[in-house]
Structure formats: C-alpha cells, structure tokens
Image (tube, rainbow, N blue to C red; front, top):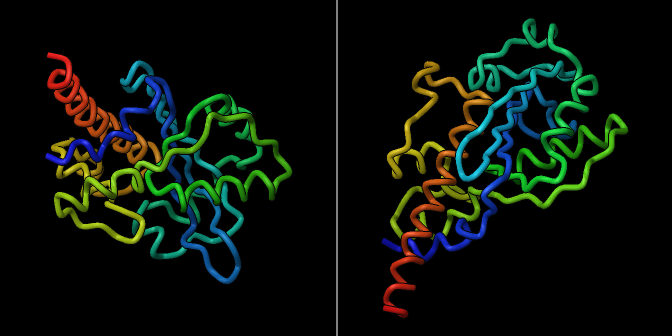
Length: 206
C-alpha cells in the first residue's frame, strides 16, 4: 500500500554505507556535542557485508540523558582513543561512498564539525541520503507516527517487521546496532518500492 511513495529508495545504489553516532548529548549554547561512538555498516549488493564501531574519547562530558540512552559513562569514554587517531580508518570506509544516515540532520553536522575542529580532510563522497526524511511520505500515508524529522527507526522497524536489534542489547542504543538496523530498514523499504515498480511495468507492458 502506497509503495509508490518509496520510489526514492529504489534509486539507491546497490553498494553504500550507513553511518550512525552516539554523542555526549544534544546541541546547546556551547555548540555541537562530541562523538562517543561512530558506527558504520557496509552494504554490498543490497546486503550487509560488514559493521564496525569506533569508540572515541570526547572532550565534553557525557550528559546523564545521553548516558541513559547509550549506557556509556564518562569514566569508560575517558579510556577510548581520540577521534583524530582513528580518522584514517573512518576515512577509508567513507571515501567514494554514498552515506545513508537515519536522521542525517543530527549526525552529519556533528561529523563535519569534528573534521573542521581537528583540521582533518573530508574525502570525496557520493553524497548523503537521509533515510528518515525519505520515508516521510510513505509513513504519513499509512499513519505512522512522525516527528518533525520523520518516522523514528524503531517505528519503521516495527511497521516493517524488521528484527529489533536493540532488544537483544537490553534496549540500549548503540552506533553499530543502529546503523545495522537502519541498513535493514532501508533495504526493506527499497524492496517494497521495487515490488511496486515491477507491478507497474507489468501493467504497462504485459
């Protein structure tokens, strides 16, 4: 139903990466938060090929609210390697790729802020695709709850019958888990869109 509204997902390449972050909190009067963990899921031929997570030592303190979400304490984060020391590894995953992010308006500016802050170089990429915003027309058409940024990852996973990976982790958010979840949701949405296209093509060219 309303799968024609998922046409944009059918335009995704077969190979891309999904990125997610967990941070010290939300943006405030002191600027953007620091990254605590950064997850990347590699999708090849429309299937998950690899998932990695980089734990990075923040300079800002992790808020109590953020700790309640990702369960990483300031004491734990103090032992992580710096963002700068891990950038070359992150760069290898990011360069020349289309980057899919669920809620790109949050994660992407924070990543760019870190690159500028530490004087790093952003590699050439194919672009950034926000799976949350792209799903808004379809989600609204079937009356799924939508915030101002679109349907949450949990909402889409439940509606699509995608396994909730957070349940296995006690409900805790994690950059690696969340980018895996986003990849799974993205591919199901692509499948629904492709099924509609096949039906239309068959009707037009029997």
